[in-house]
Length: 437
Image (cartoon, rainbow, N blue to C red; front, side, top):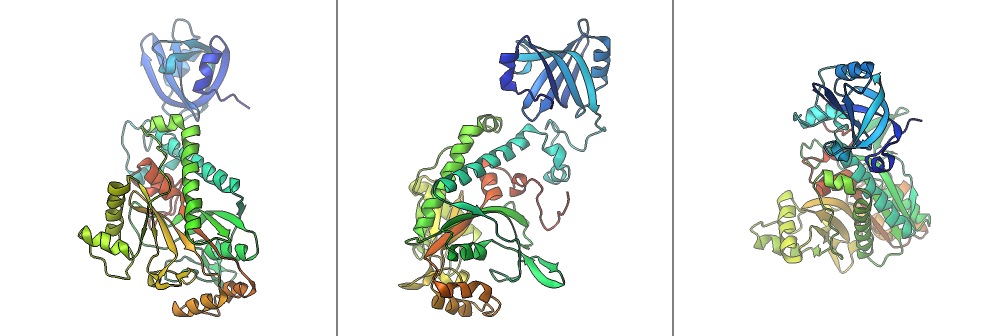
C-alpha cells in the first residue's frame, strides 16, 4: 500500500526520502522553478521542481501536468520559508497515474464559483474541495459522538426495516414500491419497529439509517431521503427523560468535533461552542401567548408554522441565550396515534421537538404504552385498525412506559456549520428533481 503522508508528519520526515500520491491541486510554472500543489485526503503538500537540480524528464512531466491529474512523487522532504506549511518535497521522480480531462466541469480549488446544482451533479469533483470534504469529516465526528454517548448510557444499535407494509404516520408523503407484486412503502421513520423492540424487552436501543418523505418541498431544509439517529428507551418517568438523553447526545457530538476536527473547523472558520444544558423548554399553551406578544397570533390547537419557529428562536435567544430549545406538549390533534396524551390535559400530547436556530431537528416524546388507550387513539385518528394490528397487538402483552426521538443528521450538520442548504450535508442528496448521481 502506498504511503499517505499527512501534513503533520512533514516536520518528522525532514531529510528523508518519501513517496506521496494525490491529485494535482495546482501547477505553477515560473521560469527556472515549478511548483506542484499535491492534494490528498490528508491535506496539500508542495512539490518544488527546480529545473537545474531535478532530472529533465521530471521537469518535462511536471510542465505537462493539468489540474486534477493524479501523480506519485518520490523525493526528499525539506524545510522552506516560502513553501505552503513550511515544508516541501524535492522530487527525484514523478509518475503520472491518471490523467484528467480538460476543461473541468467545476474548479475543486473553489477559485471559480459553481452553483449548488452543478456541484451536486459533479459531486466527486466537489468533494475534492477541502472545505467540502471537511463537512463530511465533521458530520462523521458528530455521529461518532452521538453513538458514543448512547452506548455509554446502555443503548445498543438495532436495524429496523426500510420497507414497510403500511403507512406509519398517515398522509400521502410516502414512496410506494412494488414488493413482489404487493404494495409496500419506504419508511417515513423507523418509529413503530423501534417500539416493538422495546416491547420485546431490549430496554435501550437506537437505530440509524435513511428515511424517506415524498414531500414536494423545495426549501434549504428538506430532502426526500434523509438520515436519522433514533433512540428509544423504556421505563421512563415521562417525556422529559428523552430530552435529557438527547441533550447529552448533542453535547457528545459537539465534543467529538472539537476533539477530532480542529483542522476542519479552522478551514471553515468556525468555532464549535458547547451549549448550556438543560436546554430551555417551551410548552403549549403558553407558546401561543409568547407568539401573540410577538405579533403572530396562532389559532389555539394549531401546530407551529415556520414563522412561529423563527419567533420562538428569537425569544429563546433573548431570554436564555441558547440556540437550542425544546417545544413540549403539542396539541394532540396534530400528532400521530402512538403519542401519549397528557392524562390531566388530554388536548395536549407528551410530544417533544428539539429546535436549533429556529429549525426543527428532532421529533419525539413519550409513546402510549397502554393497550386500551392505544387502540382508542388509533380509532380517533382514523387509522385502519386491522391494518395496524401488527403493531398494536404487541401492546396486549405488557409494554413498559417508553419514549424516544428521531434526530436529523444532515439537517443538524447543515445548521451547525451554517451551510446554505441541507443538501450540502448529504453526500448524494435526493430531492423532487434529483435522482442521480
